[in-house]
Image (tube, rainbow, N blue to C red):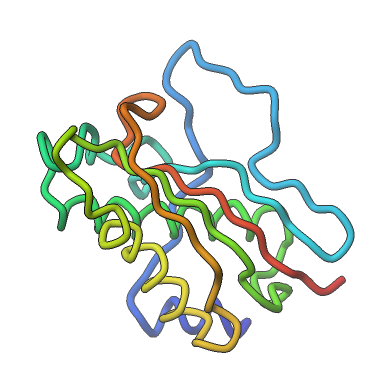
Length: 161
């Protein structure tokens, strides 16, 4: 078994099925674009195990708690890993996590975006270790996100051929 998949299994984590868009929705871009020694990951949200949107929808600080936002960010990380596995064939091809841009669907008074996006960062460092998993990051609040997602994250990773 590959190193990263073994680590996921040891942590009791399972990647979701491929993304299932809501009925009537089609998107004209790839979830992952590989170019040279980089993979660019389009914005992802939290997925349920079957690939549908996870039920963590709404604004953090209003419909959802900060902890629920953290869990949404963690599930978003698993969704990103599933898309990377599909695009790369093997998560061990990832040599470094370079950058993440985390967006939080936030109530007007909520401003603890970095603590929500920590759900993603903590997962990536837990799975890949601090050397490969550490990444630069932004965490911002938004008035809304597609389909009512609580969190949307895009990323960039370095890969080997």
